[in-house]
Image: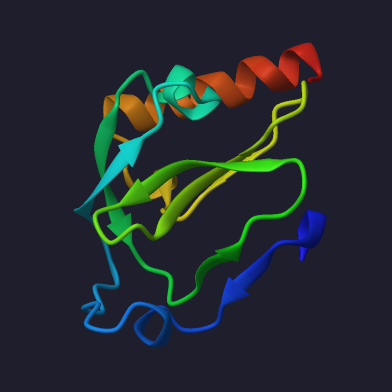
Length: 117
């Protein structure tokens, strides 16, 4: 994986007792690190997100940091520790188009692309 990261291939095996909730609806609460770029983009310290994936981040690669997590401690967001905008989230913001924090996330991406970060 990128930067030496690795994935859990099945969330249910890595986090026993986790309910499978594959839905585009915002059913999961995610905490956002207030010192992260993700926080700067979303403008909130927590948000409700959808839950569709069966994989999750296991090992964080070099030059990356955790920027969001759920109540079980499962990584929900990662980002670069460097100067360039590089991040990933474990949810699908494109299914949350009416959610203001997710709209701000898209605006931040568009602005970064315009600046060629």
